[in-house]
Image (cartoon, rainbow, N blue to C red):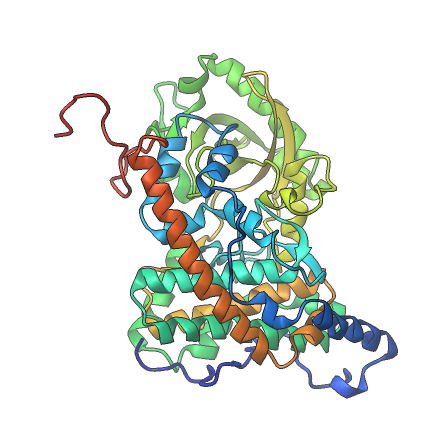
Length: 512
């Protein structure tokens, strides 16, 4: 993987990294053996959890004899999705074991539900794989690194998110051709940084934990001198490109001026399709329906945000395909223009929220709407959330009531270049993800108990390495079964993008 990054661990246990805004164990807070009585009680809970579920039991995955067919799990999940988009989902998932894993959150949720649980609960992201982290803007216009996908968020045992994350690094490492030793090191850095950060957070005040965040400048300051200068320069360019990813950029990419002088979304089927082409309803009917949904959504925002959005009106709506696992859920983009300035545009994403994949193995959501579940979970776990993040429930033009959450489509959005990272950069990314997940869990769970359970992190790291390696094997078997289902005609797979495996032709038609 190339030269090692200074400051990362040569030994398995790793060293937790603390950005300048993160709490540390120094200062006025008590050290490990001088805890307050209350903290000590929570610490004892974590130590006791070791006797219920020894850390070694979090290790190697062994499928139960009655494990559900993974293809059946995916088919069941797709029943209520847009059926003409399901083959595209299959295409994207078929491309590699890594893309399959990204769409297989439901499969892994069922698997994790069969394993012993520590009972140390946090707000889970539910799909915390390495591609679901990235950069975006705060309301104060700073660029931060954080989790960015909460469709499956729900309370649950902390280890489930960690296991989803470490397995994703192992699978991505195999996809990139990294050696077994290099992959084991990546997993060690994720788990070791998580454990070390949780220990630091256990010494911090609740407010310090709440304020902790990673800013883009922290990453450059911490590693800028250690990485290849060309990689640092590429990172800076990526930051600048991300800062340009705004509503104005979305308008220039996805819209044009129509014959009536109004902006309209450009049809690019199947990826972007205006609502007028999907429903057969008139533009006035669609606009009236969208305005009703928009008004309902605004009521979930703080009053200052409601006032802000009251100065915009919807001019067009389109369905947009997003992600891998999300393909087939109803995702819309709403194009808005300010009522006092037709050059002032805003693009919102309105995404369907269904039940979390975790609800089949934990408790049902306590929120009456799944859009609210996603929004509240995101606000709990992120250091800063989109100020326009809200939710709504609406009866569609097809007469079916569905839940949605709403956010800005682009606001300085930056995704990691997982295909282009070299080994040292991947090691940095592993630490960023491990620290960020620990911060999210420390905000929402018992950080003292989790830190006590993890201890030095050595045993935990070995367990996570064993789990990541064995579950990556399982994921490859599941991917092979998925491809076999496509080849047999059991699953339909498109070939729109040319990235996956097309469904074989039927009958005597010549495939050429």
